[in-house]
Length: 579
Image (cartoon, rainbow, N blue to C red; front, side):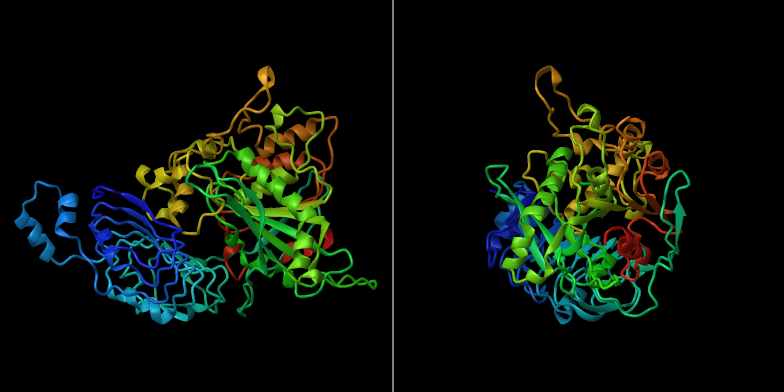
């Protein structure tokens, strides 16, 4: 009856097993079994001939076994192959040997309990078409021998993304994986470089000559070879709960991770850095916090003059993602986040036994990478009171005196730049592969329930490259944006009104021009993932306020995701600006 089914979502059902009848779904291409109670890969899915995406994250799987696969029944062959096949043909097909996962491209096994020994089952199958393998937050430890695990360049030649984040006891990789594959290791404790981190660059600092600017001398971007810790968050807290958006969805809990210092807070509390993740406002999650930001709370600032030492707390929040919600809804999450931090966070810390780590909610730095840098800028830059809402896209920023400084990293800034209007197909980092419309379609459904998190390397991770292929940015941010205001005064926000250079230009020409808070602006010289920075930096130069520009020679987009990068100049700047 369901033999023609192509997409099946059985997530969040507490399933301990799935029926053998699943093996009859011969046209199934995407299967979501996440957030269940499965202890192994169901045998009934192993031989599905057209399965390309399989999500088994958030289960109880400790080892991988591909033994005793369950094949289709004769009835299933009738549905899947067509009723015009003869009984003899179907009987012959039943006896034929079928390969395991013959076309599987994406396998998500994150948030299970898989050990290194349990992962060795991968070596027993031929997964030549695998592009994304997600193993985040398991029990992997030691050095991963990619050849013995079946994930070497020979075993998975098309691999483009290997996600190992959150496996705190991983020490490194032995062997070679596909040359163009990206490896995510946030939260790992690597003792050797992996192919993903073959990047070098020494930051240099520019002063903006048109305005007052603090010069910071920066050292090398990488450490001296010693092991650097990559801490996990101390608490995960829901800061906003939104009602179910569709009849078959659940209320959406939007949460944050908080990283606390080891030393107790002073009388006023810890100063705070809020870091927003990137992903074009289309994908990404709070776990993408770069390692150097995770380590920031361990840095102790000696104040002198009898003042107690201080350390900075760090918050990494989720927020809702486009195109299921429009850009103003995303910005409303940022407003709600600050409201929660300033009114409820300290009570929650006390309740959870963290009374010695209260936050000084009057000393906040907004930071973020890529689209997260955009959120930091648009929320933290001041705009003149005299300018009308329409010219500012109905968003005036946080207008909060607690925001003391901004630290955007390689930010998206200009939504009208020609970079976004230029089709790039395929994008350079996709190994010559293009994202098909069929792959992107499920994530472009504006009637689907909103999401506030997309796993790294997961199915939704194709949205940013797909958007660049078809120059869909920033239109995806405005697809569901309704008009603001009433009657003849109503208007729809435009990309120009929510672009950083435009807002800076307004501020520089206004009679009510105000000083912006100090800004530490970081970008790499070979970054081709977002628009060029020159226009934004020129606009910043025409406004009033302290500005430091760190231009990292030879660095690409997201260069600071390398666990070896320390960003010591940023630490020093925060010590002078936030403390």
